[in-house]
Length: 224
Length: 224
DNA sequence: ACGTCGATTTCGCCA
DNA sequence: TGGCGAAGTCGACGT
Image (tube, rainbow over all chains, first blue to last red):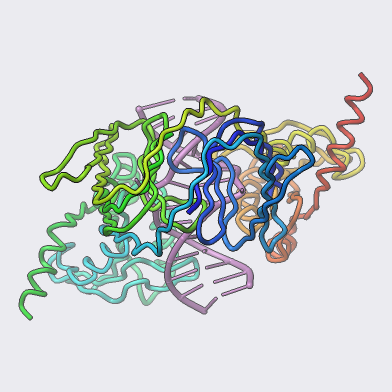
């Protein structure tokens, strides 16, 4: 990882054409040769960047200024012209062990598929990721009376999730082998607007308690 | 802008729960107090971050290790525990003049609205961003025969753009004052799959020559 | 403040 | 490799 602070101007030509006027900025060069240019605000997005795989060529222009040309396979080009270098240091970091995530939708789906009875007594799983023409339904199940149930799972339940489930229900209800299909919108947190829309469409909303679901799983594991 | 290279572990609790095991990484603290943690690969996305507005508190734990707690209004929390600091420097960068973009969709729309005849002889503009219940249509116009035309503009024409235009056409064609409405999918580059879908739905595809459109505008300006 | 939409989105999965 | 959907998406703009 190389850290350069420099007064620089930057030109990008690729998916669009863009220009950064001369100003002091941070330039990051990583081990994979990727380059990003950061201003002194906003954590997430660089002002300019070139994603790997790409190659970096260092050169000097007629004024003696450093010019870096970063290029990728697709012909995208990033040109950094440094008028003044204020800092330049390199550091060995090695390969990162990577982020461990918890609480994502996939995990919720896994937990809920194992505990369909949380949704209702006698409910059971038909299958996860039940395929339809417009995409897979998170969970397809059966209630105690043998009726079909489609479950859409989100971390945070918002309107677009209800829309998604509505489309699935419309499609599934055209299948005489499945119809009538009941809808369940399950999320750790459901926004009021989403709840209103769901209820209005006859879709049941269920708030998931992630820790409780996980706790049950942990208990299961403890039996072994 | 503060640059810290440190062997650190990181915990994030907020929209999800995540953990980074102890390893050497770059920690960026910007003037707006935002923090991002970078590994030595990938230009764009940090391993972890906290977007502004947020506050950073520095402390020490019982082992004498630096502990930074970054928090935002929504109760999201980022905790960075540094086992060893390998580099620590601060730099004054000032406010960035910002990126100048060219060739974006908005500009294409502006240019095309001024030159509806590029789409067909005698074509004219009704209005840009024509409002509908499901969102604004990029351009609504009229052909030489007085028929209505809906134009969807993209930099790169892909399937979702065709879907979007299809939804608009369906809606507009329900309006007896406008129907029948013809569809035009205009982009600098149209993916084969998008073209196939559009053609299949009776939507005309037009490849836009950005430089030519801009050239005409430049000529106009030169008259003044 | 909230909803909508674009992004050089990036990123991951699966066919 | 392309298509599709999620992302701690972020960020800008309009109401």
